[in-house]
Amino acid sequence: MIDDDTRVELGLFAQEVLLHPLFSIITSHFEMAMCQQILSTKPQETKTRESIYQTFQGSIEFVEFMKSLVAEAGKIQSSRAIQDMDAQQEEE
Image (cartoon, rainbow, N blue to C red):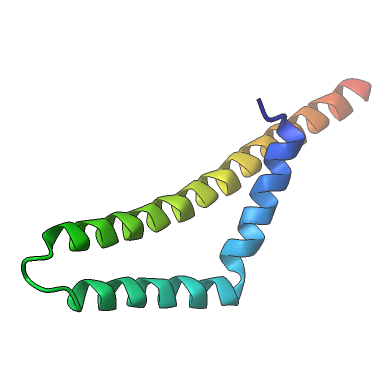
């Protein structure tokens, strides 16, 4: 089980990666390569196209997973901020 501090670190790292301009270039090139591979298959190579498509889908799922890490980190940070505000109000 991953603790909240690690989840926040993972989310912040994922956010950095997702926002980095080079990551966008990498994903675009990967998508183009997948399309080129699919288009270069012969009509009878259905299994090859399906395999390429599954690889492409996996990359999309990985990016979505990274986005979920960012969202989870945001929720944890928001929860902590609310707890800190509540603690400060109790002290006053």
